Image (tube, rainbow, N blue to C red):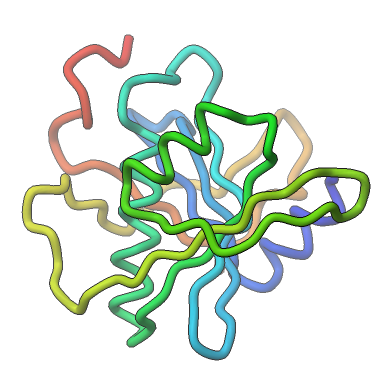
Length: 159
């Protein structure tokens, strides 16, 4: 797992979401020929259900638009019922189901238009220190992009 993240960071595929200088979520994305693939989305435990995952997915959709790509793809596991419901609610269409690497996976795609949704809180690049965990600097990569909220949290109750 660590090697996968190290590789994703080295290939500039990780975007992190910070609030008050605290990492609250991240996405791992992969640009493919005609789409942006959302490989992983995660929110800090305890902050689930506050819209941060939705915000991160919306950010990926906006990044796809900015790259001139019209499709965001992803997969989740069939047993993750909340994810299945969420992605459908966000407009993702199921494209396939298959058993791979020991898991039942459900594949989704969403066509994104080249219009920016002005209702979403804007995330801007931050000039904060690289991510570190104690003396562990494997996540410290100057090319990794960090994004922060301007002046307000995405929801009123992050504490």
